[in-house]
Structure formats: C-alpha cells, structure tokens
Image (tube, rainbow over all chains, first blue to last red; front, side, top):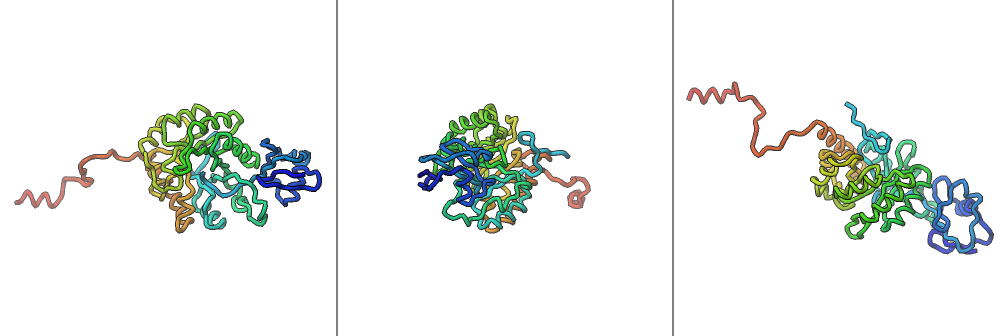
Length: 68
Length: 264
C-alpha cells in the first residue's frame, strides 16, 4: 500500500489505522492534527480510521512563526 | 483604574501579543516571552518533520496553561488554504482562535483582502474566533467586523519591515469606528513604534520580528512590554493639544529678571 504522507510517497506493508501510523512514526498524537484526503480526522477516531491505498495524509503540528 | 482588554469575552492583562518565529533558539524565545509579559502567543501550523524526529517540539517551550495559543495561517495564499490550515490548527486542540492571514503578494506580504473576507465568513460560521491580519484600510476593517471578526488587525507597515506605523491617521480612524478591538499587527521596529501605536488608540500590538531578530531579544521583549504600557497610559491620560508656538510652564509673576527690567 502506498500513500502520500505530508507530500511524500510512503509505503506500508500492511493495513494501518491513523493510530498505527502515528505509533510507527513515533509521533505524540496529542500534539498534532491529522487530515485524511483533505478532511480532518478527529483524535478519537485515530484508532478506527483505516488508511487506504492512495490516501493523502497530512500530519501537522505547531512550529515557531508569527507571519507569512 | 480598570482598563480591560477583552476579545471574544476573554480578558487579557497584557496588550502585547507576540510571535514564536525567527528566535536564535527556543530557550531565548521562552525567555523573551517571559520578559514581554505577553499572555497570548501566535504559532504557525506546519507539517510534522518526518525525516528528523529528534527535532524539539515548540510546545516544549510554551506552556499552554500560561500562554494562550493563537494558531495562525501564515504563508496561506488562498482562502481555501487558510480555512484548511485554521481547521488543522483548531484540531491540535489548544485553541479555536485563529490569526487569519491570506497573503496576496510575495514581495510585500500584503493581504489579499477579498480572500481574507471570504475566509473570515467561512471560519466565523464554523465557530472560530477570527482575528484577521489586514491592510490599514478603515473600509476593509469595517467589512471584516461586519463579517464577524472578533478583532481587526491592521498592519502598521509590511511584515518584518520594522518601518513603524506608516499611516497613523488610518489607524486612528479604524479605532474610532471599530466596535471590536483593534490590534496593530506587523511593522513595529522598536519600542517607540509600539508606544506610538498604543497612543493612537490601538487596543493591542502584535509583533514577532522586532523582538526575535533584535541583538538581544530578551531585552527587546521587555522594552516592548514597557513601550506598550507607556503608550496605553499616555492614550488614557490624554495628551495636550499640539500648538505652533511656545507656552511657558512657569509663572510669569515674581521673576527677578522682571524686577531688574522695571528698575532699568
């Protein structure tokens, strides 16, 4: 299965949920927001949201910035 | 004297709002935040760095219990991207407020006001507290307010320019007509610029570069805190009218010079 993760191709050898993906990337789910195919995935749905082949996943967090 | 600064029913003591970008280190940023006395800091929303997971999290240096987090839509060039970024920022779960930016030009970083208004309408409908970064244009500020913006944030000068308040009269007009707080957002270079903005009647000032890129960001943060306070106090105190000629501040009666003149 190949997905687009933060704009880059990402290959997984088995089915994944959002929670599995975050665990595999060692990302603390409490500090990020996740989009699947341009729609927000609520935090309480991470464990039940399955990722499908070809999905576009965005994982964002807060970084330093003021403007532009 | 009670001097409350309230946005969307939330009260702040400090009238200085600061950014989190461009600091030499996260430690310096944290110390500058402390020195500034700010209660609200703005943060950008970006993709998690997947190739270098060792990178520190910004939130290790900003205690959300102490600072109110204002996510921003910096670097968005369309209403669609700004709305999407705002939604992601809210989903991190610390704030449903947004410093809304829709940039219209790469060189000046001036806002695209048409797209800004559109994004404001969408986000207000979705329950966001929207603080739009806009031109120093009283008509645009009124439109944003009518669209439900919780404050209006006219620029003092281009982002990061440090030029100070370029159009003071417009800021004054915007404040005179506004029913929501007016926050001068961008363009401040040094403490006197912040003071001037506050003397014009602005409710608050938002800045990033002027502190972060100062030679000593922590000292500049304190200078900005004092500058904002001084400007606010001066505004409330009511300045004297400007006059073309001098007006002595000592009594005319009883000078020895006058007695000498009389004898001559």
